[in-house]
Image 1 (cartoon, rainbow, N blue to C red):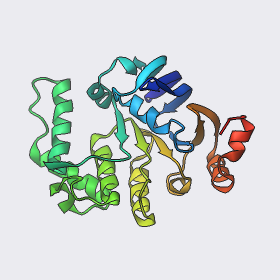
Image 2: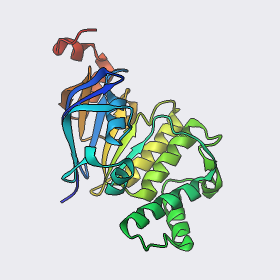
Image 3: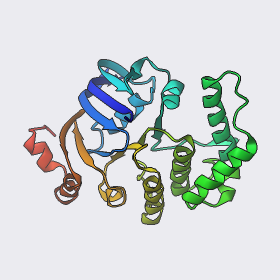
Image 4: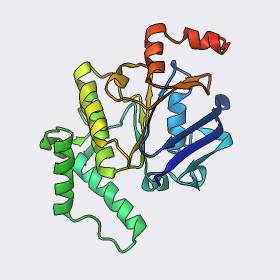
Length: 257
């Protein structure tokens, strides 16, 4: 049986301002969920809390991952357990190549599991990188560039998907990965996600717009308003939002502007 990410009655504040007001959500390995909602509804807050950003204070509720209390785990423990976050705005790390960054990440995981580990042998790592870059249709020279330094928006997002491919998480959260991408870059990123998804990977696609869901087909679509998930349904729900906007959801649930 695969891993499950279970969020129960989650309340979160940022600088004493309540943002999430009772979020309930369950994602199983092998499922693709989309979380939609207008700006300021709490979508990115949820992503930050899942990966342990200390700026966000959990005031109530529980999060369990694979049966373990996620809120008791450090950020690196969450990653090693199989959670992954693709950032909306990936940061640049001058002087650190993408390949070196990924090799160090793998080595850190191996050392945490076995303090005697010498890390991944360089030939094995090189084979892994070439395999994943070929799968994602990425130029091998990409691996030698400094992480996100001088990358276009599309290149940054492809680098995030490569990290996901190499680190092989059980549940991946894509926080507005589509933001700022033209249609070609969007298709490349979506193709990368589609090549990775399957029974061993659960995905939460956080997005403001429906268009990425034309390429990454969700099993379930959730709509967040005012820090709560107010509506869930199939892919048709995303199409309805694209056609009618969010006003009908607001009216249906009597949510104030």
